[in-house]
Length: 354
Ligand SMILES: NC(=O)c1ccc[n+]([C@@H]2O[C@H](COP(=O)([O-])OP(=O)(O)OC[C@H]3O[C@@H](n4cnc5c(N)ncnc54)[C@H](OP(=O)(O)O)[C@@H]3O)[C@@H](O)[C@H]2O)c1
Image (cartoon, rainbow, N blue to C red):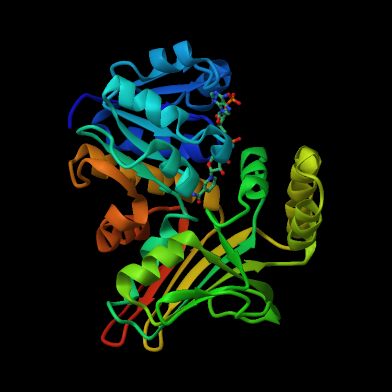
């Protein structure tokens, strides 16, 4: 894999900068970092070697083609992802490169289609979606009776993420209040759990049921009898801003993006940042804690790019949680400084690190 070239779009954003750092630390790739403000990239990544920084605008096809030319793999960490869809993936395909997207998810995958020549395209290579589909695989086996996933906390929100959260509406993303039961999605099956103490969380949270499409795929693949998924909020600030945004005309989305960012800021006035992902069955559980889900998403994206270049992921169009090796990925995360703690407790073993 020596001398392979990774073209990292959005490589100086919150997610992208960490992905680039982890890939650079591995020492056996060259990295081309791009965005509309290459000077920002140069300043931010000035301590790294073997990094080129260049101008690219996703909306300018020529500059995008130039950016992808010669790359072995294009890593897309730019956002908002649900506006970019398959634009960067198609540029990677034209360049004959593999593709890894920290987000994209079902809308981008559908827009791209199911083939990618003789290369691999991997979507949803972040924390959520991404680790939210991967971590449960460590503890849940085929035919599991019951699986519950909780994710959330109190962290800052970037403009690209706020825009994506507001765009993430409809069946491509998931269904509020729904759960998986007996081989199908059951609508309006669950209620919010307010002020609840969830294992692994440092304070009581409001846990809102939301069944993501990623969990539906997981439940169907593992033939889980019952799957519940809750997004945890430290206060009512973000759910309130989201409810207002979704009740209003989409043309006001930008104003609500600002409101979401402020809601996240207000959560952090009263507490230190934390973010927790837990998965539990009747007999086993896994808990991962971090202070920064953006940077940790960059780590997952870097691990995915590495797995593709090492040919651990074959040609075709994939979601990360379905093709990454759960045990190997979690073992790599266990040693990452961004992971505050990672505990796995199965019926036969107990492992933890912090
Ligand atoms: N799966 C997950 O768990 C997860 C977690 C966090 C974030 N995400 C997703 O990751 C994406 C990035 O989030 P972030 O927090 O890192 O955002 P960010 O800090 O705002 O970074 C976005 C990056 O994209 C670049 N960019 C934006 N528009 C561009 C364009 N037209 N052409 C070229 N580059 C462009 C920006 O550079 P310039 O503006 O200078 O061009 C910047 O480098 C978002 O889609 C977000 O939803 C996924």
